[in-house]
Image 1 (cartoon, rainbow over the protein chains, first blue to last red):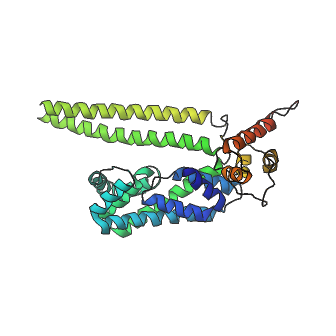
Image 2: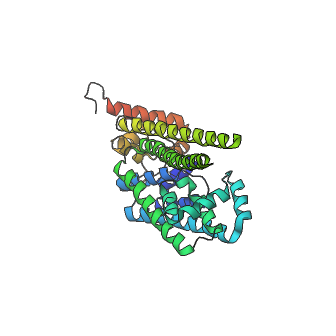
Image 3: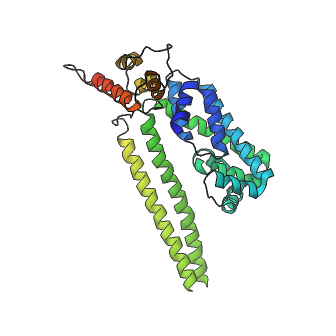
Length: 199
Length: 114
C-alpha cells in the first residue's frame, strides 16, 4: 500500500499529500517522513509548488491531529482502546496521558515532527486528559508547520538523494529517541538510588 | 530490600540499553551520512521516470527512450508500476532496463565516466 501512496503523491501532488497526512495523523501508520521528503524533491524538480506543498502537508496534519484530539475528548478511553486495537497498536493510554500532562505544549510540539510516531497517541491522550483545546491547537499548528518545512526543505535540498536521506533520518530519529529514553531512565535511576540511600 | 534491588537492576539495564541504542543508531546515521553522495539511489516501483532521471542527473528523455516509451505529456507523472502495467511487462524487468540505461549513461563505451 505504501508504494501506491508514494506513487499517488508523485502523480497527484499536493491534494494527495493533504489526504494522506490527515489519515496518518489520526493514527494509521504511513511513511509520512518519506512522503514529505519526496514532496520536497518534487518541489525542487518544479513538479510541485513550495507554498502549496508546505500548506497542504501542514493543513492535512493539523486536521488529522484535531480529529484525534476530538476522538479522545468526546469518545473517551473506550473508543481510544478500540482504535488502538484496530490499528494494531498497543500503546498504554494512561502512560501517554501522563506524559502529555507532564510535557504539555513542548511535548505536543516535539511529537509533531521529531518523535512523530508518538504524535497520534499524544493527540488522543491530550483529548482524554482534557488539555485545553486552544493550547493544543497552537502547539499542534506550530509543530506541524515546523515538520512540514523541515522535511520538505531537506527533500528540496537533497532532491537527488531521497532514499539515502530517508535512511539517515530514520537512524537519526532512533538515536534521538534512544537518547531521550536514556536521559529519562538515567534521571529515574538517580532518583531511585537516592531514595534507596535515604532508607 | 530484594524488590528495591530488582527495580534498581531493571532501571540500570534499561538505561544501559538506551545508551547502547543511542550509540548504535548514531554510528549508523554517521556512516550513512559519510557515504551519502557515493551511494547509488535505488529505483522503486512508485517512482516516476522524471524522478529517477533527476536522482541520476540524466534527461528524462534518455530513460523514456531506453524503455521504449513515448511520454504522454511534457511531464509524464506515471509511476514505473503504472508504465509496466500499461506496457504489460513485469515491474522488475522495467526497473532492470532503467538501471542498465543509467549505468550505460554513467559509463559510456569508450567515453569518460559521467
